[in-house]
Length: 71
Image (cartoon, rainbow, N blue to C red; front, side, top):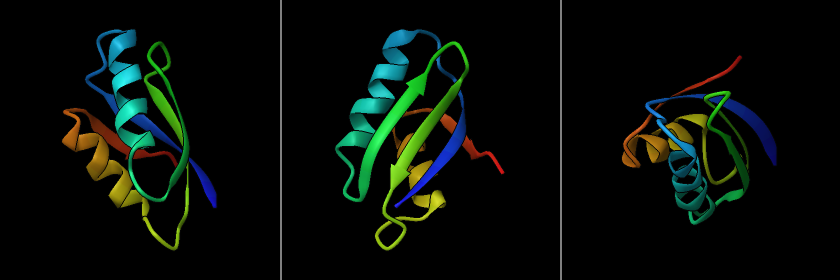
């Protein structure tokens, strides 16, 4: 498991953060997610054997938001 921080673009409210958490938490390979509307970030813990950072970014994009991994 790895924890990675992602910056999120396009969140307008707390419901956006909740939506990101819901979608990612239902994605196979993701153990936990904590989205922060005010900080425009999400901390995601996922299994690198099942997902890459790009897979997480694509899942966030499917929810209608932009994302970038923080180095």
